[in-house]
Length: 392
Image (cartoon, rainbow, N blue to C red; front, side):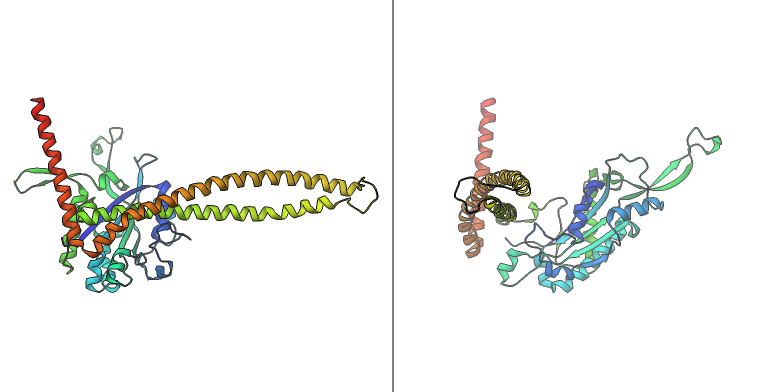
């Protein structure tokens, strides 16, 4: 089954409390990234079609104070920020020129975003060119990168504020008092009613219509050789084999990430222990206090030596407790690390034959899996039919 190139635009709302995480990811402000496919040395290749000169939160506050947007009528935990992510299969860009073609494509996608949400409400628009597509890189034998566009914006709608009955001038009641630019996720992306092919009214999601508008916009702008994406879905864009492989890769990636975190924690524990080691040296010095060459077993201490001995002994006792606790914790984490690594090795061993077979003969593997799935589906349908007959 030939993989189809599809345009996809995903839309995700965020509350104010969690926007910092998205900002650090989109603007590449992190020092370390959990995604191993991000290559920091390629970050300068990312393109800003709109750069936020402050933070997302600060920019929103500035616009709010300037009266450019309003939160009137919103609940304290309302979703304030929205993000559109524009994407096409990586192979699509490789077939048409790679990085340079991606810049042209997403420059047009940004123009579409401006038209959809209003240019003045876009906080940031960044094309990422630093995330490696490992699967396609292995297939083509060279480094290939997954290009996509993040657009962070405020979902604004125009809302008319009417004069109420409390207005002294009764002739104004019910007329428009003012028009505010209200932030509202639900109103910006409300359901719509369209007429289907049968001439009947049909209620559809606004995201589905957004997907269609994006597809038509890009084709009208001269970008072809792709199909319309399926709104809100990624699994439907893949063949059966590709979906199974992606699931296994995700599981492997999760275990790899956890393993890295365990290793970093163990390194931190070992570093703490090394910091405590000088305390032992101090204890050795304490043991030598008063041990001068004498013909008796008595040890004589000066007042200063006794005070030093007492203070260091107390500190050494606390240090020993800390070391014991860390050693115990290190043992537990080491065991957890060993268990996790063993699970990773078992999973990799189970997945490897499948990956080898897929690489050697993808059509045969795909055919086999399709046949197995179809048989399972047929068997299930038959079992349901039998149950219905028993009930009758």
